[in-house]
Length: 471
Image 1 (tube, rainbow, N blue to C red):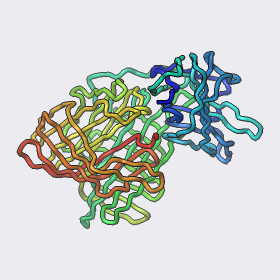
Image 2: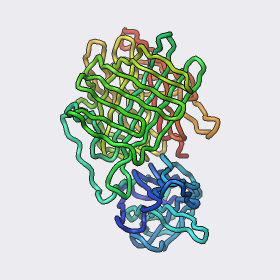
Image 3: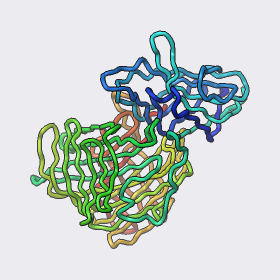
Image 4: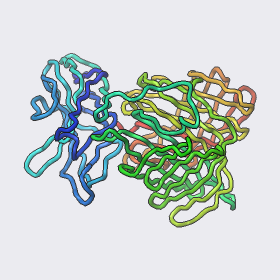
């Protein structure tokens, strides 16, 4: 085994509010790097150009350095470990879920502070625009393993709010002052003619630097099982998103997208992005389902997350695809709301939501490390009578892989799921394979069939696979 530049998982982050760094080109959210033999993988949640619209940046690059002294600005002095170009940005735009692999140039043995820099080519030189300094770590020529370094920060405020239990509704339907927060809807829509579509709609809240506030990206995707066509649209939500409360009920917006909780208990969701538009009213036929018994689960990095679902939402309204309008008369959607200060970059997951025809629902959350080893997970099952069960014992085995033609990224698909303590086994199959959004996400409608004990169960499912693009 060749020697590896190894770093500790703990990281010290520096951000100089009011300095030249991060004012024009800004790196926000969790960032991470990991080194394996002669390669380094770097991930960053968001790299944004905060300059006015109509401007174009120079070529941007992620540069990794090993410095003998703690770096807090100015000229970088140290060993260049990696230099990975990532392209140019227009003013007001960003790169999201950046995942890049490049050649690693190992330094001499010693103790270094590792610095991840976003640099811009000005036409004459590379200029630092933003950076993260990790804690000191020792490199030895005999090292045969590697670790992942993860960092997270926000402007002028290192700490976010702690999670509070018990969860309180309708307040906790809204967004919180935490590093990550999202509200997610997925499921099946049925038209008055009987045609079915899969749909996924999500509004995120992520920290935005250098201001002490947030931005609100949004995703909308539709699966057409008849034509095996997947439509996916995204919006950035930099300066046109917010979460506000009207008469105590949250209204979450991201540009033209909105999620509104009503005093009646209904939820209105609407969005118009690119070739997709929808306007739906949802009515829940079951109570809130708390995960982890009290609404708190532990993520793959050991950090807690608040998490609950509404698993039986009856929809009605309208859907438009490429200008073709459909009236939605029925179906079943599932809402997830999750928030916390966990580091999802560097901690990847496989998420399954099984929606049975008898009204029952099963959620499975499996976490993987940077090596794609399973490192934990949890499940929640509510049966048709309303009884709820929790556990951590389950296995997911994929029968094959789907390779995305454009990127050559391989996703496991066609799964067998087993939960010993429930005496449960299921087969989960995608309605078609090509259901991907960007380079990091497989997000698709599936079918499920199987048994719990002697009871036969069938239904629909949604599966999310995140983080298979890092090598």
